[in-house]
Image 1: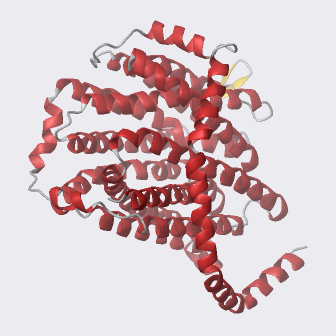
Image 2 (image 1 turned 90 degrees about the vertical axis):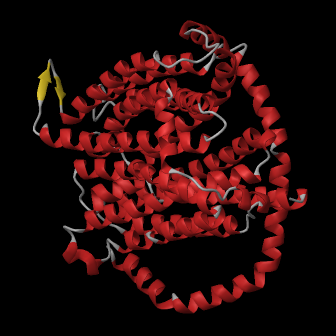
Image 3 (image 1 turned 45 degrees about the vertical axis):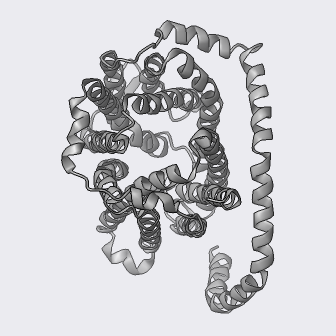
Length: 508
């Protein structure tokens, strides 16, 4: 592929990532949970099921991998799945409208059905996208490129989460928590960003040379091969057990903040921002440590801290939650970065080059199913112990506290399973602790982090320049068309906007 065309394609992919991150931030996460809890009146066990659906959808990656190997149609499969999965959000957006009020008991189940189908399509598109981008991005620059892409996407996601959280808090203070229009606006903006991302995705070309070589005869028996690799099987067992412990409680931290601690969305998004900043900062530190000392000791050290974090949630009280919840978010962001990075690295390290896509697909399917079952079981436990109220001195323990304790115990136990995984030349957990202590030293670690950030800003300068030039060209070409579109939409929206203005005027 011509270098100029390739650079342009990579820029399109960065813009796709940025707008996709905006949709993911607005149409999902805490906002989707708040919508289900406050507007659709979902029960905790239903929240658990909602959280499980995206992970359960990973099972289809086996079929996606098979389909890609058979047809080689990576771009077509990715594009079609992305478009349909995003357009399905139209159904979610119109759910709170008054004409559906008579079906209020069924709206949660409609939401679950839409999220299930959207997640399946999203999982299929993810497999195709990864294969597509692996062909497009040169192997010697993949780490740098995807690092920059993820950094830009994360920044965009953080900004819109903060803005949307503030907007939602202001709306609720003005119109009440049960007013659905704030969620309609947020989800609509998310969908718009997702469709813009799809337009950029469509402009990314597929590398022709790989389209023919990827077509091959493939037997499903190949998916059993990774299970015969004892070391790889040990890794699957460890990650499956660990992710079960994490996901058992993960969706209920949000329920705990909203229903028990009564934290507003603006504050929740601020906590989330601190977690993301901790992740971005620690990614720079964990990378060299895992390269130098190995992934297994990083997993052990990070896992020990993560296993203790649920205890911080237990001590948080409705009128005294700032410090424990802030500490929980910071530590989760910092040490989840270590586990995620090291698990991915050791997965690639233990997967043979030949047939690697099969190893990755099977790993994602098994761990996804286990991780999907976990929040469902968590919801089931919360329902069983719904009336649990045990007083420990002057402190009351509820059903959610019990789930957090079980999660902490499971995470601690699974650390013994990682010991069964063999990683050549890996160091000891104590060596990781000593290196981490040195890297976080104010005189050495922070100084080196500052140097790192300066270098990264210089490296990303060209991408920002290209993006700026590209958007200028688009703006010049599209100005006339946009004016015509706005004129048509202005006429079309004239009456609805007038009604909306009257709504705000007459609310008092």
